[in-house]
Length: 89
Image (cartoon, rainbow, N blue to C red; front, side, top):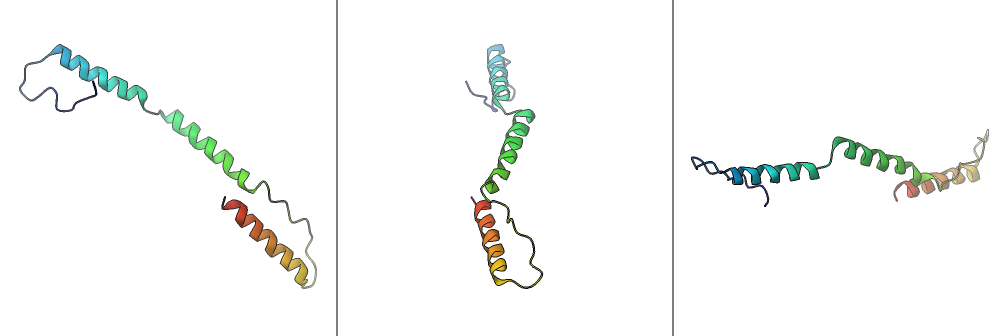
C-alpha cells in the first residue's frame, strides 16, 4: 500500500495496522531514493566523460609564422571549426 497522507483522519481512533502500513510505506519510499553518494557518483561519471568529446581533434602541430600566412590562417580556422564541431556532439 502506498503512503496516504490523509491517514489517519483527524480525530479518528488510532489503528496500529493503519499506522504500521503508513510507516512501512514511508520506509520503502525512503529506501528507494537516491543518496547523496549516488548523485555525486553519477555527476562525477558524467563529467569525466565530457572531455572525451574533443579526443578526436588532433593538435594543430604548427608554429606561428612570423608574417601573415593565409594558408596557415586557414588551417587554424579549420582546426577551430573542427574543435567546435567535436564539442557540440
